[in-house]
Each structure stands twice: as C-alpha cells, then as structure tokens.
Image (cartoon, rainbow, N blue to C red; front, side):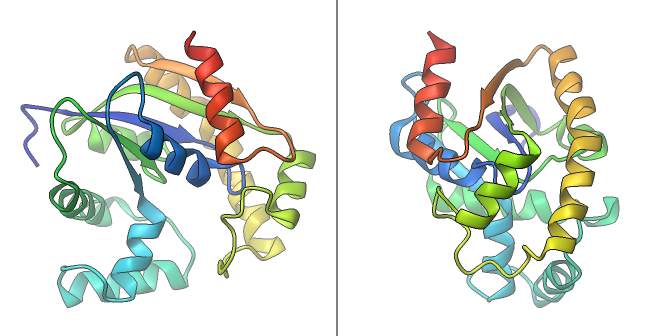
Length: 206
C-alpha cells in the first residue's frame, strides 16, 4: 500500500449490534458528500478468507480461521492481515483517489489506529452511540437484519465485546479528534435500520 497518497477513509465506531454494517452498506449505495464510497467490512472480509473466497496464502487462511475460532482481535504481529485484506479489496473494487473507504471493524483501539496512520487518512469518525438497553434489544430482535448466520453472539461473548468497546471507544474517538478528523455522533434507537441511521447522519452534515 502506497503511504505517500493516503486513502481517504470514514471510520464507523460502535459496539456489536449498533448498526455499523447496515449503515456502511447504505453509505456504499448512496455515497458520502457526493463521492463514491466502498464499504470495507473487516469482519466480513475475514470470514471470506476463512472460507477460501479470496486470493491469500494458506498461511493467512489458517491464521484467520484461528482468530475467528477464538473470537479475538488481531495481535500487533497480525496487523499485516488488515493491510493485505484491504489491498485486495481496493484492487477488487477499482478504488480511485477521489473516493472514500468506509472502515468497519478496524481500527478498534489506539494501537491499531497508530498502525494505520502512515497508510490511511481518517477524515471522519461516525460514532454510533447506543445505551445498554437499546443494544441488548437490537441484538435480540435484529431490526437492521444483519445478524443472521452469526454464531459469535452468545451472551458471554457479547458481554466481553461490550466491556472491550466501552473501555476503548472514548480514547479512540479522542485520538482522531486530536488528529483533526470530523467526529459525528449518531444516536441509535431500538428500531433503527441502515436507512434511518443514514438519514440521521445526513442531518448532522447539514
């Protein structure tokens, strides 16, 4: 990845079930401030790798399968997987310099943010703000329709992910504020879909 011409990115921030993926899909369909958008769902791309739907080495496939089975984040030594996956995604999509990549699932903490600093330009952070009661409702009822087929949403794992998210979310958002990125807070309600979240986002941009 060429670090001289940083790729313009929007970063979706929010816990499991807040609606990052549905919003990312609508952003890809509608665009952002008149520009074309490519939704890079890191979790989805990892699942594609694990099921041999991408052109990566068997070593990477085996490593990704282990990471998903353990339901954990990449270690610093494994961050290269993100860049390799993003490189392939960009080539596949025919990304152009005047377009945006929507990052969904990486970076999630300060170490990851620092790792991508030389490669990507985070121009806007879209922070999906959600309360515990709203989030548990969304995980149970799936109003956005993006949880089907997921096997990583047991109560224990969800609680673990929530604890991790709230601990790291504020430092990550503050990091990008200091870097000069625009931060938009979208308040998530129980029945919000990708479309309604997109409309809320538009209202913040007016």
